[in-house]
Image (spheres, rainbow over the protein chains, first blue to last red):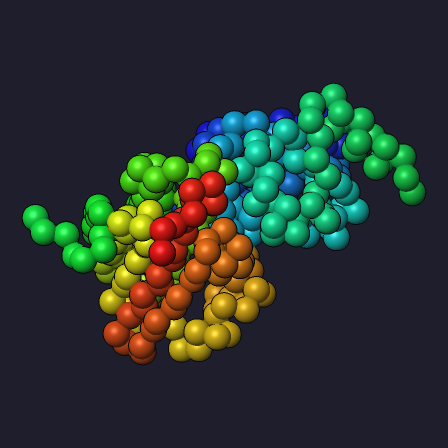
Length: 120
Length: 150
């Protein structure tokens, strides 16, 4: 699992390459936590899932934990960017699509968080 | 090698209960399962179910020590996939509770979703567990487009 993170305005964009499971979920959690701790300006989280071919409940749990931090502590939004079909199906089955919005492109994801920031 | 009655093919995997072996198990089982006429969606479902059962064994069976996880995969002569995920660990104290969607015995954020995914993605899920003896999860699935012969 390779993880790249960068901040764009008040959004943290996390790009993952690899399978998100029991082995890799902790690295994802730790990285996002560190990025959030480093910048109080971050309100939104964009998870670029284009390079993630597989996710299971360990990965779902890791994303859910970050949803809590973003939505409850920072009143922000979490966007899943272009999840592949197997990943999208697991997100839906886990009920995570109630907490996470799906965008098909990065431009669309950034527009969604901009709209989220405008709302008081 | 003589195959048991009603079994067309089978493989057995045994490995230490380490997180890095979860990906190996699900991938190996999916490759074996592809001998049947499963769709790509169905093979993805099998991967998720195996990942959940093996992750449960890795996290829960042996506490902080490393034990052995055994995965038996078989294809019946009727064209059904049967998987057994077996550990010799501490067992699940309350199987019915463990299978409830939101139950988890450790706060590692997996939310007890593992059994939900197994139930949803496989045709049948059976869990046998005994304290200090271990747990055996049996998963069954047949390709939807090629119903099994009965």
